[in-house]
Length: 216
Length: 216
DNA sequence: TGTACATCAGTGAACGCGCGTTCACTGATGTAC
DNA sequence: TGTACATCAGTGAACGCGCGTTCACTGATGTAC
Image (cartoon, rainbow over all chains, first blue to last red; front, side, top):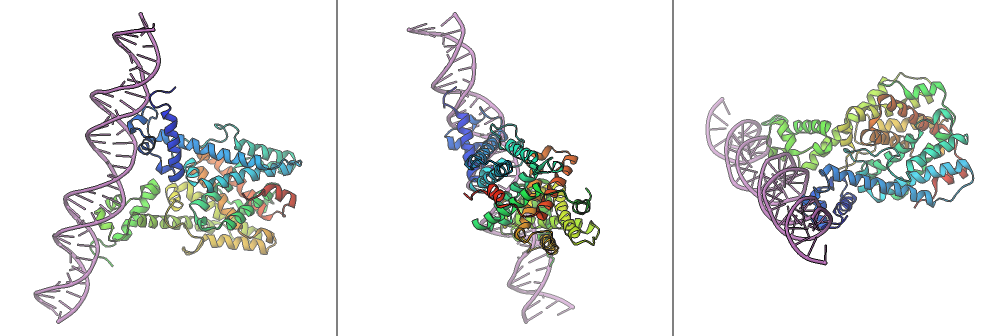
């Protein structure tokens, strides 16, 4: 319903998203959002309980855009006949969309995964959720006999962790100085290792034991 | 040299590190550090150019502690005869130390990888650098015939990304609600996939093509 | 359809906070003779 | 060894900033009759 302003709540969310885009989560303040909309800070309190509440909306927005980026990449890929090709293609598209978004919209990416508030959920809140598609791709790899059953549980998390860690190391970590060519190279190498690891036979008990060690 | 205070610079760095430990990078301020040491904020400007400079020292401290944690885990593992076992053991120890540190000292971990200032370097600044040991472990896997040569370049980054991403998803992301048992389970699965991926044969061209797609 | 009234979105001013940083200074330490 | 002096680490006060949040209010919108 439109009163004085029209739709101040959404206008403030948009302003918060723009702030997040250009300045990351720390730039999302009630005062700045109100200023950008051309309204008094007090007015924002009609629509948000506090600053945390506004930031939460910016996080949700950022997550939605991340989701869009992954879906866009999924739709760009050609349809493939072979099940394993199709499933690995989906995996690659999701990873590619994730990285593209992180590099293209670092402020939003950092906001989506910033500390505090509700953490981004695992596949529940967003329509057309790419996390579910990742799950489906891994299920398909299992059914096609590519992925050993013992390795199926939580395999999503390994893929996600790899992409997420790589994005973070590029944005804020030691890989900041990478050229685009180096970024692409490292991306391809990492993805190949992941795909090969999903498809490889189980490690021998000796090697597993050496690798894992003891939980401390 | 000890003047009025004795060693104010180091005292301030210690205070900054404590602030980072309990409150993350955002808690590292000149005023708070000076307050904790019992000194005027102005005094800090005798030793640091500005707040960024102090934060940089806290980052360096955090990185050193992270390095310690990995080395400690490396020393805890028994020596193994088999080259591949030894190399995978080192890989696992480094990953375990990394994760342990992130979970035990989240404030320091976030500080080490916080945005701004100098990014943590790749293996140069710290004595007894675990990144170099990771490199050596991968070289050993190559020489032992476990890791195909085509997969060697930048393999460090895949392992690091996996551990880093997993740590971040645990600390600030959707895995915050994981129980210790779930954390351990996901950790083991991810590490196995990585180790298997390093040792697996090269993917077929068809699968590689489906996986990678085109750089956009 | 018109009027009195209730609702409530947004205003304007102000609060207290902690921050980074600068200024003119003081007083302890080190040094030249 | 003693004294005058220079150095410089730390003080105390203050600046301006942007923030979150609250208060009493105004004036436009919607509604009851």
